[in-house]
Image (cartoon, rainbow, N blue to C red; front, side, top):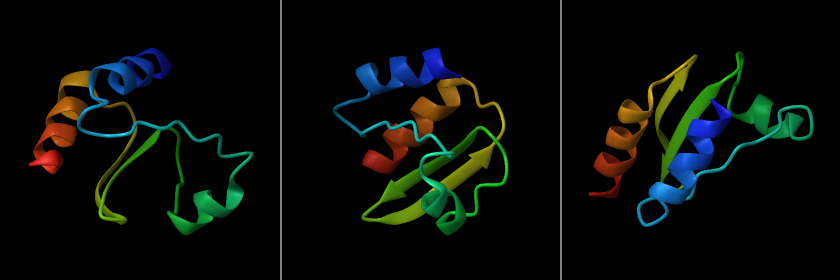
Length: 71
């Protein structure tokens, strides 16, 4: 998923900030957001989680979710 995440960060920068978090280095975030499997995608708007998905997600779905949340 890393190449897709990198592409999304470049392609969707006008709609969202795309971050990849190392769960070993950020255990508090892992617990706070109840991340139980890798990868887990969280989409935030105004500081609130508005969408989450665990497992592989195709790039088109991620783009749709990002752009829909930007409206």
